[in-house]
Amino acid sequence: AQTVTQSQPEMSVQEAETVTLSCTYDTSENNYYLFWYKQPPSRQMILVIRQEAYKQQNATENRFSVNFQKAAKSFSLKISDSQLGDTAMYFCAFMEYGNKLVFGAGTILRVKS
Amino acid sequence: NAGVTQTPKFQVLKTGQSMTLQCAQDMNHEYMSWYRQDPGMGLRLIHYSVGAGITDQGEVPNGYNVSRSTTEDFPLRLLSAAPSQTSVYFCASSPPGRDYNEQFFGPGTRLTVL
Image (cartoon, chains in turn blue, brown):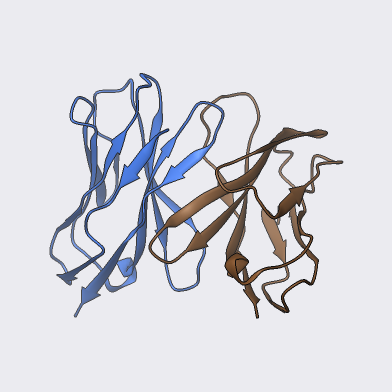
């Protein structure tokens, strides 16, 4: 079974600085998707960014980018120019064939002013 | 479009009571699923459905039943609630046509079983 590990339960960063959240996963599949979801205090799950395993180029969405290392099974999220609104729980997730998601335990990110 | 809706937002049950968590989507998505979120464990898949009339078990199905009589609705039933089912429950849906698709989540239901 696939597993997803987020080794940082909590992190903090100063406003306007850069922070990287770590994620590793274990799978024997060759084709899959990886996602980062943001969960603010409202509890809503918001898709931040996604990466297709067959694409070598790292995904980027505005201030959010990933470092995808397929051989190392690593998928970290970099947030640049951190804003107070980035304060949230962040989940790394692996998508199996057939749209089933496997989530990590999450990392609480606090952005300080 | 309202997206994925869930009712109720909050619910308190006593041990042994039954209830149904409602989930509906108006995006004509074929794939729907239920997750539970517990502290320190992320979200875990309970049940899922690839279309009307078809359901299957996820990682933690025990204590829960589902059915899918229409494309729009995917209710989750707790037949005899237990304190271990205290959790936040999320419904999600995905559009048809691909095997790997972004999932759209509902706002969640916080359930407490006393």
